[in-house]
Image (cartoon, rainbow, N blue to C red):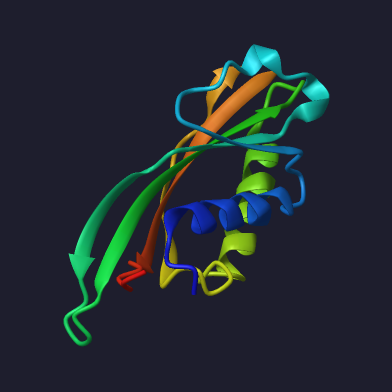
Length: 142
């Protein structure tokens, strides 16, 4: 187990890149300027650098880090109703995460905590998925 946030976020990015319907995945510290991307680079998922807190597991007394990750998903729909694309993309993301809920054994767990409503206007829409990821903190003396 890697026990560090870089490996977990890197694995999450790789996992999301394999979601059907997702073309681009970007890790950032601040909001991206979506105008820098072409339509053929969408659907795009932005992974913002997450906040982190710690807690302690009571049985083994190991330190656990808790990452609160927000995904912002941009997609294009030229019709008037983006609901079908939203539902399909969300289902594909949820299925991919659900099939690998320990992120390749890098994490203890990953939970989808919240999925927002769609925002935007023709043709560009976006929404958020909030994740809660826990992993054991590397406490070895190196």
